[in-house]
Length: 376
Image 1 (cartoon, one colour):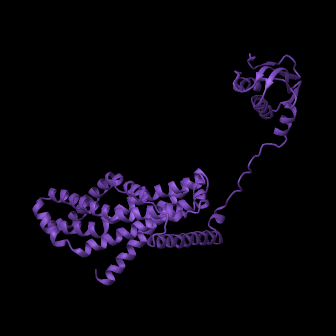
Image 2 (cartoon, one colour; image 1 turned 90 degrees about the horizontal axis):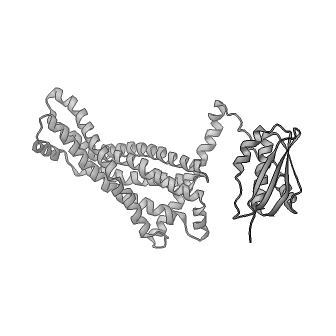
Image 3 (cartoon, rainbow, N blue to C red; image 1 turned 180 degrees about the vertical axis):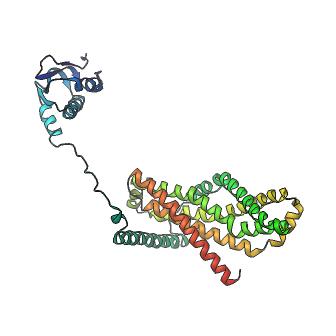
């Protein structure tokens, strides 16, 4: 069946009212002129009203309704009175329903004073809310880990393997760069002081002990917090926005067992390996600086072996496991408790990084104090 192309013509001869004549078949699949052509002409109309004439319309469907609604909105913005005449049966009723309720305009947020932002009661409520979320997360995670040990958890090995690859091999480049430079910086800072006493050889002791006990694991943890912790928060926050976590819960699967546990286990397994890799590169970086001071590689290695002790290695490995748990917990908690918008996902990623770094600093200080008291 032949169809008549849909078209319109704007008549502005009458100073009191402009007439928009519609013609042809306003239906899906039929060519019609775009609304933006009319949108550019309406602001220059000098009349006080616009009448849409539909006497020449043949067939119509939702395409016509969408066009009329756009005309109505444009006339409202241009402060033109909008009306129709000789429309096909049913168009007037549909248009009245579509325009019966005015467009919702969200109210402007009330101004927030500095005092309200720093109100002790508000800060206390925020602190209590986050404390409850953290305690609830720890409780659910503990139950999920117990179910994993009992063999009743919905944790897939394929997910664990994928997250291991994401946190491990993909992080080699940034870990290599930071560890090498940290070792060089550590050696340079020590060399500046040791050269005053002619004890440049002890740069090897400083670099080995510093990297094994402190800098290697801490810099690796900070990099993983900004890289993997934020990724966990963004992934889970996006799933929360898309209601995927709700769907998993509806199917009777625990999100903790299915989403959080494999991420945490992957980071716990990978962090010690990355720490060993970072320690080696840091020691090599210190050797590069020592070579510039006239210390041969054999002298550097021999002196470094005297400082190498199992206690230093064990302290670094223990820190790596603790840091991995804290990073995974902070990232997953921020993602699980994220809001359901794109802005909330960004806030969750930011919160994950900031919280992880705070956890790392506090945990590092606590472990150092414990080791000092124990004599390790």
